[in-house]
Image (spheres, helix red, strand yellow):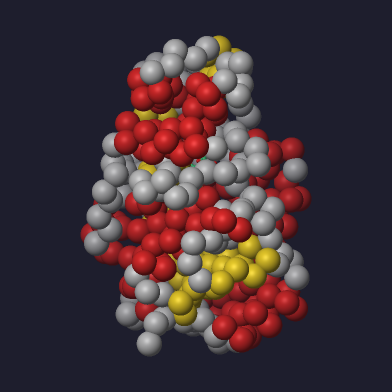
Length: 324
Ligand code: UFG
């Protein structure tokens, strides 16, 4: 019998890659998505219910009748600068909606939960690469909204026996190597997508937000992880939970970082376009350097990333972007 999995946010960028992979592996999937940032066409497997998580009555009915073995909770708002301007949106969508969902799961006695957390919970880490036991000290409302949810999950787990895996994503990028999926946000603020859209001529230039950070070339450093490798991290986490694995928290990145300038130079190489770049002021809420220590997920869950190559990541994103 196929295991049943509910995926919130399964029509979004990361969720849709995960749904595709779950479908290939034979899981029976139900996606819950309000399509605020997701797309119907992106749900390549299973059923889609278009509903907002704030509609707890409908969500509970859907979950109750599907009776899943596990829930993977992607649905969230994810843009750091927006979270500074509109924190209520972030606490509502990321913290309150997660709490509502967890309440429903505990009422329905559904025990396995995978949560999309973020490297933003670390804030400005003292030691890089950062390990999972580093202090949580987020510097923006986005990171705080996710950290609070992680804490809520731990408390609920302690009290009611929920089993969970929180995955702390670093900078997710790239597109499905088969070309079926990719980033399709209404608004593109992420570096690689912005760079590629600039190469395409959708923006007149790309801004570098800050060149005076304490990094070798003065620009921020991030650990870019291919979206399909991240989807696979959910699969290994799910298998572990479904096979009586313990609750845990894992970083998802590759363990090395690239500066904004390095990303731009690879984007220029991949596209063959020397797009215009200008140096601007720092963007509020940006930590200088975020790099994952990813040894824990490799060791405990046997996660084996396949696409640890910035050029490949940008190539897949470029193939996708050109089609759009
Ligand atoms: N950047 C630019 N110009 C741009 C866009 C971004 O210079 O046009 C810079 C940013 O200032 C930052 C870096 O590129 O230094 C990466 O920025 P992104 O917006 O691509 O991503 P963030 O690091 O802000 O955030 C992303 C996700 C978060 C997640 C975080 C974890 O959006 O959800 O990675 O590392 F928490």
